[in-house]
Amino acid sequence: MKHFETIVLGGGPAGMMATIASAYYGQETLLIDKNRRLGKKLAGTGGGRCNVTNNGTLDDLIANIPGNGRFLYSVFSQFDNHDIIRFFEEDGVELKVEDHGRVFPKSDKSRTIIEALENKIRSLGASILTQTEIVSVKKKDEVFHLRSADQEWTCQRLIVTTGGKSYPSTGSTGFGHDVARHFKHHITDLEAAESPVLTDFPHKELQGISLDEVILKLGKREIRHDLLFTHFGLSGPAALRMSSFIKGGETIEVDLLPDRSKEELVNLLEQNRDKQAKNFFKTLLPERLALFLLGNLAEFPIKQVPTKDWEHVLNKIKGLQIPVTGKMSLAKSFVTKGGVDLKEINPKTLESKLVPGLHFAGEVMDINAHTGGFNITSALASGWVAGSSISYD
Ligand SMILES: Cc1cc2nc3c(=O)[nH]c(=O)nc-3n(C[C@H](O)[C@H](O)[C@H](O)COP(=O)(O)OP(=O)(O)OC[C@H]3O[C@@H](n4cnc5c(N)ncnc54)[C@H](O)[C@@H]3O)c2cc1C
Image (tube, rainbow, N blue to C red; front, side, top):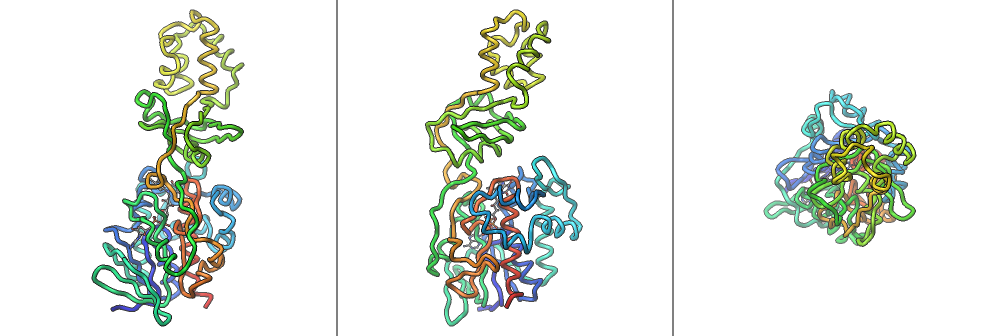
């Protein structure tokens, strides 16, 4: 049985950063993950390019963490998104900022980020154990005992960074919630967040079309962001954000050209009246979407189409009605809402208020954010704080 001062359980962004901070502050540290490689979920973010953080202001960060972002004020005062950017750049990783403040490695490869974290862990002298699933965690005589099927480790300080319950194939199966429950922590209700939306709509015709900056409307709620049509319905940040207000049975309205008023579009039609309809509309919208909206009007010159038919097309462009049948399950959603109750965690150190030496960081806590780098920021920043909390002792 090998003893460590600190063990970090779970090698996602929270766990890797917690290991780095712990080792940086001189702790003999072990990081354990059950996958063959660290950061399996992180690798899949940003379409495989790793949306490592967001370069917004503190207010932006908090606003984009609808699930208890305010709890992170203390965390961000110690380590925030700009520290994350500095951390990678000082390590020689070149980053770039894309739309909506999303930060990616210049290489466009998740591997760049994961390797940088892993190399840092090793250079600080911490140990990494992969392909090792922990099946039980107990505390006896002030020492934590972690067991896999055939081995046991002990530590003074345990940092649980096992993630939520979404995409369990990446390793996040909710084990950290069981550990927390064992130590009498309360787990708030677990729900799907940032879920792709299921629709009753011609999926085949529109599948793969992505639109920048549309407005999704549902009741009084409006969300302006990018949208993606998929084989099951809608995805992309606009749909993922709207998903928290969806139960199934509603109709979403989409303004496909929010920066052009209907009057402006009518004038444009008049100015281009000699053009073939499809040739004109494909200057405003992706061609496949234009053809879908135009139907059999596509081949006609604009001037030959009766005004009432244009009225119908423009109404669709300014308010496409999409019936919603539901949203993806927790397992197929990007983020888990709910987790270890924050009332039982010290916001400054992320140490359990119930069990000394036990810490939590990342999505295992009751924190959920929008995609766009905000969950990863929360995971990396809280990981740093949990790992460095030893410096308070
Ligand atoms: C497809 C997809 C795209 C996403 N895109 C974005 C995005 O663009 N922006 C954004 O901000 N967020 C995004 N997210 C969410 C983001 O990836 C997560 O919030 C983040 O990875 C959480 O980090 P974490 O370290 O808390 O947990 P995780 O990354 O889930 O890591 C937990 C780790 O713990 C390990 N583990 C669990 N149980 C055990 C055990 N018993 N023994 C050993 N190891 C264990 C797992 O193997 C896993 O590696 C996306 C998520 C998905 C699924």
